[in-house]
Image (tube, rainbow, N blue to C red; front, side, top):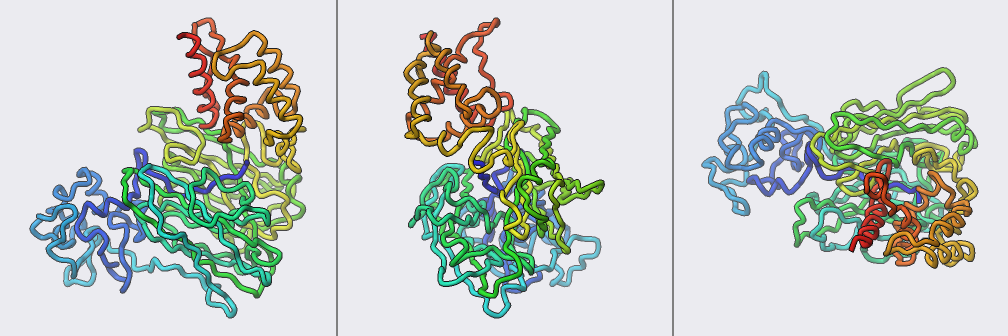
Length: 558
């Protein structure tokens, strides 16, 4: 339940956009060669990064400022090299229309960079970076390394903004291997947002074909591979690998985030990941460690909202059995994020593990540590996320959708065996380290989430028998709620708020009714004649539950 999804690049809301579909609005948008790397294409025509996303080049800036309309930029010379954008992209007469074949489809040049291959001098002008966008990981060429491609069959993309799709794959169990690298196989760059590879427990259910998933399976929670917009692949440190096979992960789950901001229909995708793994086991097993916060509330119209989260010394003392070594780190927020840092406090020393003062969701900065950075028992880590919400009109909460936000520091470390927990993430006053052996402040979480457990069933029935999910606060309800709050999972405060929020995400009708009935006595009006239901400090799920309860309250007025 504390599992968090690294959604690496969501839709733009008031800031830079990485919509691949903009290529449909310019001639040869899918056919532009890299200016100085033979055989490679420049996918993100308007961006500095050939793969797209991140900062715009001169053409991208002009295109955005002119309403993303080709007719408005065709006669411009964005890169200042003496040729119009139309001449460079094969439409010298500026007569091209969307869907038509351009007058020329060869001998194209980049409208955002001066072309060094021509006789035109580029003195004082911006030229394209001559670096390959192909994945480069020396470990993949070592003797014994095997490659396996995991892909979903081509599947229709729903005509909605955000879709998560999951599918499982069984791995070779004949012996142990170390997974040392992952490389994307992207079928539809216009809608593919990110891919996560989860390691699963042995009892994880099989998902044999792509199906929509609201969250990774509870039995598949360990992120062991990822791709996100602007990344070329993931290459692990030379001394560590994720253990798969006979005594490691035998089944993995691929989770895809499709981003379809225009809600277009008729699109298909069959993307996946290449896995590179070796029977020549490295010195250490790798693990993933998370810091950050899931209690995010960003008011609209703010130039700066700061969120701070601590992984305190008491937590590293709890979850670390011995020193671990960080080998890489990356920040994660969504498009409202403008800066993020993760600080390590060890003794009287402080250092930044990440220090991204110009955070860009489309162009993440992954930091590698060589030598690796030790994290000792008793150390603490502070995650700070800064957001800007000038262009929004509603409060933003934590969540996976493109309109929500996140705040995580994500680190790969070794040895995995030295940590009993994969994250140190906070929710209000709670920390993931407070959950020990499935218990939180005396609450057995597995039992509380099991509707058929005798104690849980008794509490739910007591509330549903005395409180209405539909018609406001019944006279006998407050006493039933008071009795229910004796249950350690429903004790007043952050534990209750958090667990009811998590329970509200369950799709079954009884749970929905229980959560609504539990909050039904919040329907009493205050001195101003309003219902005292607030989403301040709430997650997006909290807000949903409050909205449901408020809707029930409104029935009283009919």
